[in-house]
Structure formats: C-alpha cells, structure tokens
Image 1 (cartoon, rainbow, N blue to C red):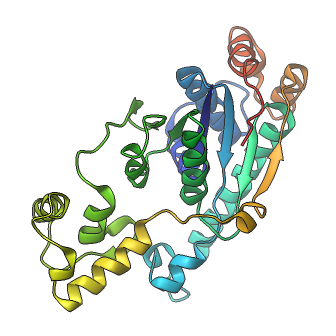
Image 2 (image 1 turned 90 degrees about the horizontal axis):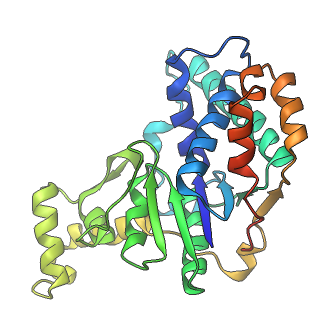
Length: 289
C-alpha cells in the first residue's frame, strides 16, 4: 500500500499558477477545475492506495519561540494594498473550500487538519507513523522542509509536483543545515556570516565529530538552538492526535458527473476526460491512519 499525503495549501498555490492557461469552453469554476485536473494527474502519476489531503493550522508553538516567524507573509495594517491582499487571501480560502467540498462529497479521500499545527507537521507525524509500520507513503509538495524526512526511512518519498519528479535524499543533515543558515521563506534568520557553502562545511564537521555546536559563540549557539526548534517538525502527543479533524469522502462517479455539470465544467463530463477521471479515482481506498 502507498498513502499519498498532499500538502494542500502548497498544492492550491500551484493550481492558482495555472490560471493563465486557457480554459475549455463552458468552464465557470476556474479554481475547482484546475484543482481537480491537477489532482487527477497527480494521483495518476503516483498511483497510491489512499489519498489524504492535509490543511493548514496555526503554528502557535513556533510563534512562542520566535514571534516573527513567517512575519513577512502577514498583511500589515499600514500596507496600502492591505485590503486587496486580505481579499486575495479570503478568495483563495473560499476557492479551496469549494474544491474540498467536491472532494469530500464525491471522492474516496480524507481531509485532515489540526488547528494548532502546520500541515507539514501533521504530514510528518503521519509519515513517520506509517514508516514505523513499514508502510509506504509519498508526500506531494514543493516544500523543501520535507527533505529532512527522507534520511529517516526508505518508506517515505517526496514528490515535487512543481518539477514533476521525486526529490533525491540529501547527503547532509537538513535540520542542522537549516539551523545554521536559517530559512528566508519562513523569515528565520541564520547565523551571521554563514552562506550555503560555509554552512555545508560546518554540517560536515558536526556530522564527523570534528566540531561540536557547543563550541560556537554564545550568540551563534543560541541562534542555532532556536532555529533547530523552529525547523524541526512538531511531534503530536496522543492527546493532540485526538484533536485532528477528519472529513472523509466516498467515491460516487454519478455524483461527479452531476457536479461537473452543475459547477460549469462540462468538458470533464465528456469523454475521454470523464473515463480518465473515474479510472483514476475508482481504485482508491479509505486511508487507515
């Protein structure tokens, strides 16, 4: 068996990037159309036994460690384009909700969310649990944070739907590397004076035991330890796992046909698109997590 774990927000942005492409005649629901078309292609490529889509929660524990975490992504009140940016955020949320409504209504899939942790944390917890049971999973995301899992188990693979290829296992310790260099995409500053090459050299020295992180200066050591806590995946305890919200759908090809027409996507109800869609999703089974 292979469980496909989809990083939903990451995937949604990828679907939005498809908006510049021309749509088939009669299509009204742009985002849902792109979402389902890309999802079908992804499932057809990976050929999983089960499909799990994971939504974003709030990274509260990271805000406690570093209040400026992802601070550059927040819409500031004094931003002259604040209203437009906020409207864009809400529009994407509504579009994703519409697409997920189709998924949970018509497809054999599970949608998960934990209110107080990010999607990648929840995905990592699931992937590790599956790997312990010698079960295979494929994480679908262009987020490089997931590469830290590839060194843990051969049962965990990472598929980048942006490059449409599997990601190679890194030779260096990704956690240590990011603790040194930081992560600009998440607004995590690295240790001053360390670029990629110097960071990799320090990674190698730490790995072979020729250098211990305790020998860093006090300032640099504190940055390293803070960053390590920020980039590590948050481990859910038993109580927190019970707080995971799950919505499960069941495959209904007839309902898919009706919704394709109701949502203004007639091209997906026509052949050969409809048969491809049914053939792709009819083999999926409900995930046992």
